[in-house]
Image (tube, rainbow, N blue to C red; front, side):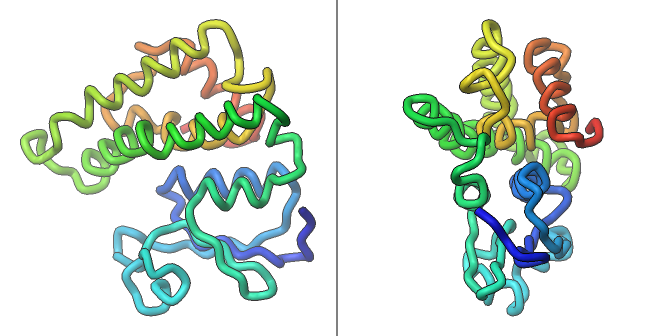
Length: 201
């Protein structure tokens, strides 16, 4: 897709892998955008102004020049990247979607939540759901096994699957998880960070 200069506004938090994946896709595709930082720690997603953008009270949200709004990170990146080489064709497209769904259901809900509660809410261990760490470890195990025979998740190249998954994986240490335990994941994170030209976490 093509956008006029600054035709896209991304309302997001720099603390959120879900938001950064939208930023990285826009940058990768050379789409001009304005970034509006939303402070989730100050509960700005609960303000009347923000709820007018997304009644669900979640970032990211994008606003197009014609006023249309779109929420949910993977819906946004799929729309932005349609027709680009970030979305493979045929069965590889289905595999990419498989990983996007898995990321939001099994990965983000474990690693991102554990990270937020440990690093930002600073909750003591006895106030953190004890299932979060084993679920996070299982997600990293699945990724490490998948990467045993490949350098990217789908199609042998960078796709939305990699961009979606790297967002919170690169912050695993903030969830108390050392990626040295998952060396193939650690190497893949470095590869995707290099492909996207983003700084090390």
